[in-house]
Amino acid sequence: MQRIAAGDRAALEALYRSYHRRLDRFLGRVTRRADMIEEVINDTFWIVWQKADQFRGDSRVSTWIVGIAYRCALKTLRQHGGDPLESTGQAEGGHSLVDPHAAHELQDWVSKGLGRLPAEQRMALELAYGGGHSLEEIASIMECQVSTVKARMFHARVKLRNLLPVLAGQGGVRAEENEDEASN
Image 1 (tube, rainbow, N blue to C red):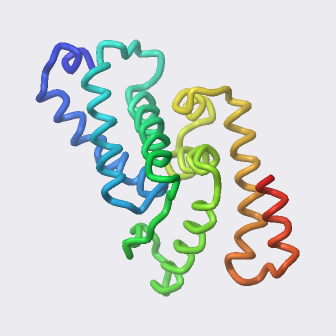
Image 2 (image 1 turned 45 degrees about the vertical axis):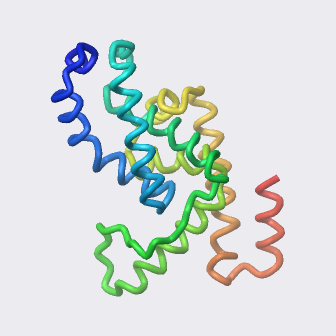
């Protein structure tokens, strides 16, 4: 970070190469729009370039960078009408299920559920389960209290518990009513 703060473009390029894939995976869980993902990654590293001298080491570099990406993603989602998930036909790898069709269906089902959550709740889940961050790290990234992170995750899980059966076609009217109650 010191080298970047001193204007070393090669250091920024090395940091970009080492974090691009990680940010791409994180942001790919927030939106499927490749243009938005690249915009957020570019905005993130522009801010890193501009503010590297402000990094104080209070957190890990990765937490600081993901925090910047988180805030850039929220801003971009707001600018694009908050439409978080737009299917491009891409499937995330890493699942070793026997039936590839079932894996795609499961991914689509969960993505639709996550897409209906408010951005802050969705990102808290993604940072925890997708990114492997601790509650303290998520609080630092999201610039809020740990108790706020816990509340966002709790409410997101309640909403998903009520919403996913509806999306799977198993919920009926009662589950839809629960979804409406959970979103209020």
